[in-house]
Each structure stands twice: as structure tokens, then as C-alpha cells.
Image (cartoon, rainbow over all chains, first blue to last red; front, top):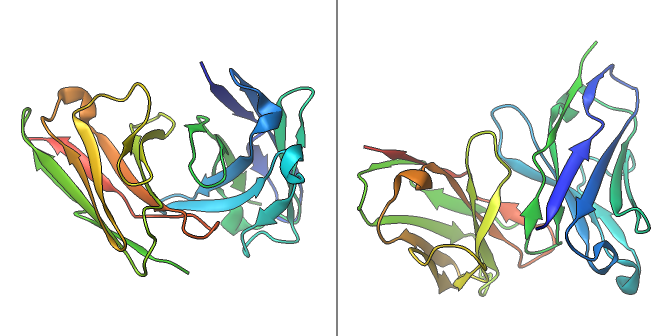
Length: 118
Length: 107
């Protein structure tokens, strides 16, 4: 059974950093792209970015709203995807989800809440 | 950016009813349309991919159809466990965008 478990969320002040982790199991992690989404209170699902598998160059892409501040990486040996979030803003407050896939999102984690507030 | 217009935003139906949700894309997305179910407090779950393909393990009462700009998601006989919010999602470009969701309730 595929499982994705996000961790690392919490309360952080504006301008600070936070790193989220997505621990995967139940599939060959290195073979798949991983994506991150978020959902702010009262808003819809917003794509944050993705990282492709190494066989596809491990390339990344990001939404304009986070480009230059957020970085996605992966550790295939531990089946973990990371979302490094720097220079956080209040508008980054959301539940963050990791997913398996880059066009079809085959599996989702339960999400981790990030609150950016002073 | 491709915009997805999903309707209705909410729907109330009785157990056993046929339920239909529509999703319209702002431009031709071929068959690059997926449907997800999201129950309160749970992770979203893929139900239908590429407009009409049923994901493994998903009950056959769920189905999808359409291509181009107009798509339909159907539950042939509503069950109590189908109470959830349903989302369409396009991926004609890699910036996959979601519809705003349809909240389905039991009448």
C-alpha cells in the first residue's frame, strides 16, 4: 500500500524558514516524480512545485508565488521528498500536501499545517 | 493559464440517486482531466484519470467522460460513503489546475 506522510509543519514567524518532509513507502520512490500542493484557509488547492525522478534529470519547477523562496529536493535512499521554505510570508499559511506524480497525482499525504504569523 | 470551471459547487442527493458533476476547461485540454474525491480530514484520492479511466480499486459506480473542454463525472447510484468534495484537475500543461470543488451531501 502506498503511503505518504508529511511532517515538519508548525508555527513560524514571517521571514523565517521551515523544511517539510514527505516520507514515502509502498512503491519504488526513485522511479516517480513528487509534487507539493498547498491549501490556504478557505481557498482551493494550489500547486507548489515538483521534482522529477533522477531518470528524468531530477528537474524541478515551481509556482510563480514561491519561485526563488522554496526548493524541492529528494533523498531516494531514504524515500523522502523535502520542501525547503525560506523567507516565509503570512500568505504561505496553508496545509501542505505531498503527492506522487507530476500530471496525474496518484497518491496524497494527509498534509501538514504551516502557519506563518508573528 | 487554463481555468477550470466546476459545477455545481454543492449538491444534495438521496442514496441511490444518479449524481453528475461537470467541469469545463477554458481551452482544449484533450483528455488530460482527472477527478479526485476528498473526505473531511482525509487525503485526496484519485478516482478517474485521463477523463475516463477508473483508478484501480475504485468502485465501478464512479465514471468519467468527455474530451476537449467539457467533462462529466458521474456516480451511478449514490452511497452514504460517497459524501465528500469532488475535484477535477487538468494537466494539459504541467501547471495542473484544479476546479473549485463540488461538495456532495446526502439529502
